[in-house]
Image (tube, rainbow, N blue to C red; front, top):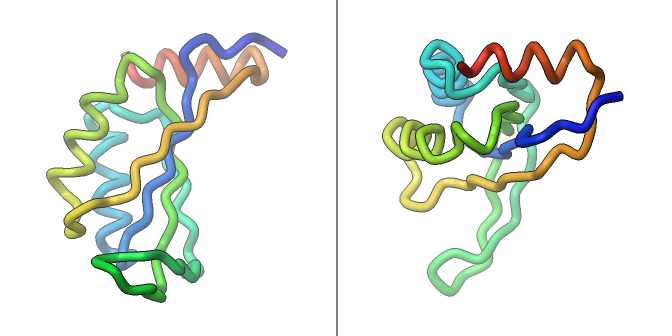
Length: 109
């Protein structure tokens, strides 16, 4: 195991697989993320929006990146996303395999 200095996982939900794939391809192509896992089956989201409790079927993106790429990644997600306020939650990674962390860092340079 290797300390994962700066490695992050970002969670983003989308209303469709088409939108999720477009975001995933763009952020990997532009080296803003090393990898994006797109959960093919929808997740059910229950949330408060404009004073009401809403229920929606969404698709989850699990994006692997680094802290250095977060601002640019967020700008790209906001540019491509259809929501007024898309989910963009950053989870720090404390450690990972030496080879994976090295690959992640090289992929976003």
